[in-house]
Amino acid sequence: DVEITVHQDTLTIGVREQAERETQEGERVYRELRRSSGSRTLTLPNGLDMDAASATFENGMLHLSIPRAEAAKPRQIPVSTVTDGRAAVTATSQGDEQVTARESGE
Image 1: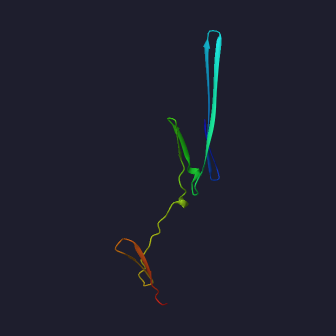
Image 2: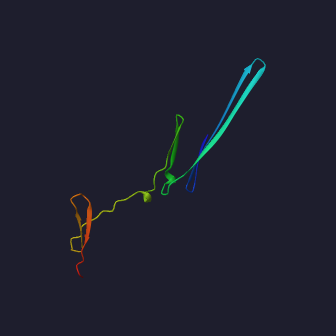
Image 3: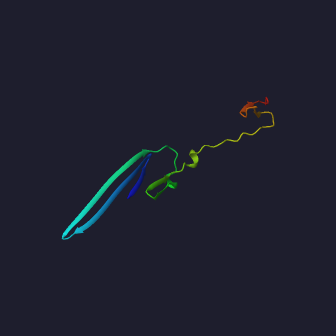
């Protein structure tokens, strides 16, 4: 049994295993019970979308996917050239952009 819980910025993965085996030799019955448990706690970074989290368990491997929230993803801000003389954007030969601001005196 695998249990995954999230509280604020803490993720806890808990595992419990229980196995039972019974064998009979003549009039004797042997019963073996095995129980084990463990857990791991991790601190999560900010900006994750916990509502979109998913977990799968396949071939003994737990795969946990927690995407970043849209607000936490980096965004590019487009830069446009203003043609009325107040501001202009020029590119240098290395590909770095340099912003030049000019005032029209109004």
